[in-house]
Each structure stands twice: as structure tokens, then as C-alpha cells.
Image 1 (cartoon, rainbow, N blue to C red):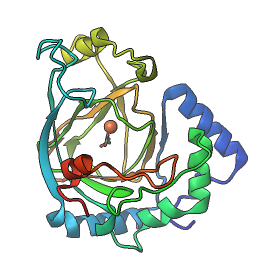
Image 2: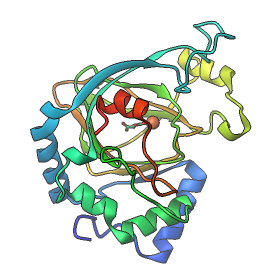
Image 3: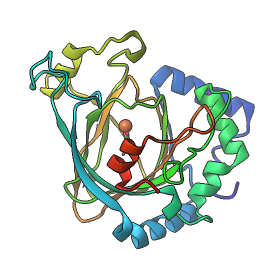
Length: 255
Ligand SMILES: O=C(O)CCC(=O)C(=O)O
Ligand SMILES: [Fe+2]
């Protein structure tokens, strides 16, 4: 694939094994310079042209992305609200010929992702909006602390702000499958008692992150350059639609 730098031999068995063991050990796989400079420039130009079509919103949510639980006070880690503010454009707004779509649908790339995350199948969303997205964070915009609903996410940094916009995380802070929400550790993080790790991301870096149990945030963008991030989302089963309420929240529309 001419949009992936040759230093990432995604079809080499040895490289697959190395990437899988890194993800298993660290909970995150960071591949710098994954996209070629030419591909990044093409995506960035499209993003800059379409940012005026993006859906921008501010939302308040707790770190578990769940409704308030009245059994706990509002200032308890279970309920404490943080702010997220960003804009995004959906799959149906991105050019068919975009390098992002070329990558997303590429058989070798999908085989790479399947192997690394240990899924037998990967499918696009069945709705027209949710598979490939571009996120924008203008000055002051941020993503508040949260655990993801999905077991993994793939992102590519397309434009980096002058400062801020830093991805921070703490690995394996809870165990969602066991129902262990680990309020104490979340409380210590939110109060500043424990310090998170930071992830170094440069233009063109691919990040494959397991965010279901690893809490994370993106700090506010500083300066005039907007943070631009591509998100590639797959499902392990076919025919999955993002729920109507989730589509309204994220995109402000259903189709
Ligand atoms: O913006 C990022 O780098 C991370 C995005 C993220 O955590 C999310 O969309 O859930
Ligand atoms: Fe996330």
C-alpha cells in the first residue's frame, strides 16, 4: 500500500508478532510515521476544507460514560462530570478516494489489525457515518477523562496543535468485565493525587489503544492550530449500527 511507510511491514509475520506482543504488554501500540507525508498532507487538506461542515458540541459526562447513579453523591468518582468539546465529520462526508478510506478498507491492513487485536472478523459500521471519522479540537477544546465502550480504537494524528492536545492515560485502572469500577483509583486521578502517563504522538502516528479499562483524556488544545485526528472504527460482528441516540450525540444527525 503506497500510503503506509515501508518501515511498517504490516504483512510480515515477524512484525505482526512484535506488534501483538507490544499491544498485549502495554495496552497500546504506537507506530510513528505510519502514514506517508503525502497521505497526511492530503487528509489534512481535506480536513481544513471541511471543518466548517463539522458538528461541534460540548458535553458533560462521567468517566464511565453512563447515566448518573443516585446511590452516590454527585462529587463521587462514579458521578463526577468532566467536559468534552470537539467537532467531527463522519464517513459520508469524507472523500471516497481519501487515504483514510483506502487504509480502512485495505485487506492487508485489516488482516494486520485482526491479528494484533485478536479478532477473527472486522466489519465496518452498517450506518453511513460511524466507520471513518475526522475529529477536530480547536483552541481550548478537550476530551475529558473516560473509559471507552469499545475494546479497541485506532487513531491517526493528522495535525498537531502548537501545544496542549496531549493524550494522557492510566493503564488497566478498572476491570469492566468483572464489574470492578475502581472508584478509589479514579478518585485519586481526578483529584490530581496520582499522575497519568502521557503518550507521545507526532504527525502520521498510528495509535491502537485498548481504552475499555485504561482511563484516558486529551488535554485542551493551546494555540491557533486545530488538533486533527482520524478515527478508524471496526466491529467484530457485521450489521452493527451506532445507536440513534449515540449518533445524535456525536454527529447531531442520523444520516
Ligand atoms: O483524541 C484522541 O487521541 C483519543 C480519542 C478518544 O479517546 C475517543 O474518541 O474515545
Ligand atoms: Fe476514548
